[in-house]
Length: 286
Image 1 (tube, one colour):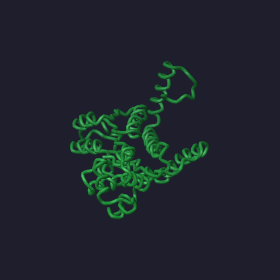
Image 2 (image 1 turned 30 degrees about the vertical axis):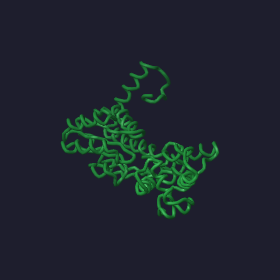
Image 3 (image 1 turned 60 degrees about the horizontal axis):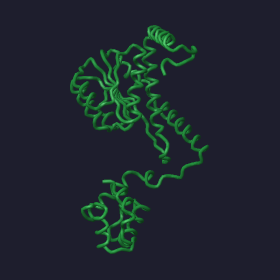
Image 4 (image 1 turned 90 degrees about the vertical axis):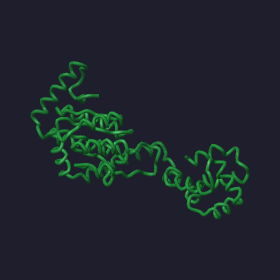
């Protein structure tokens, strides 16, 4: 249950005492979650009976359930409860670019060449590569991997559907590789699909957070470094770290056979020129 939403939705129907409790909770969730029931009642200037009635009004079974729900609400994180003030428009343009640059520098500084070499060794002999990702950036990056690697002649297919990932995982063997993308490394469907693929001997390359469940299941890990800011209104810059990792990996793979890959890229450029025309400097794909 989302206790904060339940309180906000009922603000017009509370009694005077319940209204004071509601305002206290909404203004200081951390205090409401950590305070004793006596302290909470005293701060709101209500009786224990009013506090108990408030708990039932907002959908809790009892006061114990209210405390549990408040604790869960507080655990979401203070930046979502009392976010920092949004900067002026010109300032947040600069902040967005600054966060992206900081993320890219942080990842570049943490890159380990031996990990990319291990990733190349895992992918190169694979009869088929599958890239898995779910959610926003992770699913898009799994498809970005397909775009990058298919140009180099690698047999690769991307999937973001949990049922399809399970179907694919059940067909794999030691001659297959799976690249799994996840900013958190904790998505249950991804973890389950990777467990299934591993049970049949497939090799796992994870682009994810170190120490996460997915990272622990990987044969090779390309670690991400997540450092979210308190400005919650802009999209996460972490996805740029994943894109940089993919670009470095794709370049490493391309350079394993530069002559053959140059010919592949030439043929792709020719096919696109025949299809759409355009300048020589246009990218290979939209």
